[in-house]
Amino acid sequence: MTSIRTPNAAEALERSLAHVDDLRSRSPWYRERLAKVGPITSWDDFRNLPFTTKRELSEHHDRFRCMPHNAIAEHVSTSGTTGRAVSFVLSGADVDRLARNERYALGLAGITASDTVMITTTLDKRFMAGLAYWLGLRAIGAGVVRSGPGDARGKWETVVECGVSTLIAVPSFLLAMLREWEKHGLRADRTAIQRVVCIGEPIASTFGKPNLLAQRIADQCGFSLHGTYAGTEMATACTEREPFEGHVVPTELLHVEVVDEQGAPVPEGGIGEVVATPFGVEAMPLLRFRTGDICAWRMGTNEAGTPAMLLGPVLGRKEQRLKLKGTTLFPAQVTDAMNALPEPPEFVMVCVKDEYGGDELEILVDAEGAALGRLREHLRAALRVSPRLTTLPRQAIATMKWPPGARKPHFFIDRRDI
Image 1: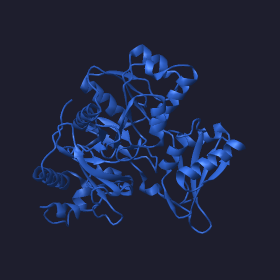
Image 2 (image 1 turned 135 degrees about the vertical axis):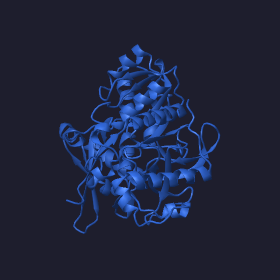
Image 3 (image 1 turned 90 degrees about the horizontal axis):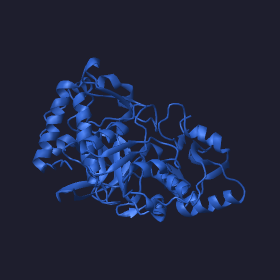
């Protein structure tokens, strides 16, 4: 595994200040934003710099670009899960940086050149993560099987034929694979799979504790589960070295802050919004980008035993936070509770405002009768609140969950602003 060195405090500050100087000189957006900002010489100065928001990035997209069109090597985009997808571009150097980061991140999870790794996510549709996984695995020297999403049952033949030792998969899809295999008498322990790099969904409820979904997976297999956290805007992945222990932040490539509602730093062990400043990005560099992801953080160690920042599981998206009958709830908690069921139904969540301006959550589900009653009791026990349940045919739910052009399912539809 290629090591990414953790800089000391003085080096980290120097890198951050150099990044600000680079933005002043190259970025049309930041040149204007920082025009009236004085010299930056300390962390206090850095923390007083303006945040970059998703709305700014969406509405002023072209002004964040720092290179001409003919110098762009890759065109990618955000997923658009919480709004309109935003185009991003990478230079050749940015693609190399992506490979270096993912080589390190996947290496943290124990992947080596001896592994054969199945990527069960899309590598098309301008999906930067799929590109990153492939680049990182090729840099490691591992064998790659690009199976793509879908066909949970059919993955078995490929896993066995290719001698797959590692999966890169969305946890809920992994569980669907295991359940399909079990139905057909196919046993996971008869494959060569040792570990899974889990993407897109959290597998821990807090540091060191698997969530309901991960517990259900563990009931069906002995795979080692490693979470990973990344975002197109971050241009950097943070992966767990030890299952459920927290995502290691590669501070040579990324400066992370965790802030409260007022933008002030959250103390170690606290929960707040992740703010990311990726270093070494050439085409679309960002400063203090508010990801909207709510996480906890603590200090731990990296693979070299050096102190490192660890990010906890993504508890939810800030803009998706709900308040139901006095209880704070994130859609990810509902998804986790649904996936914990022995036979989870097809479902999608829809949130609207009630007549008093409060949040109202409806779960559209392909269950009825006694099954619907059991589901209601299960959710009340898991969430401490009972969302409204409405029966809808499976195909209608699937159509809502997979809007045109989507590269991953949209389990949560937010209609509070409509």
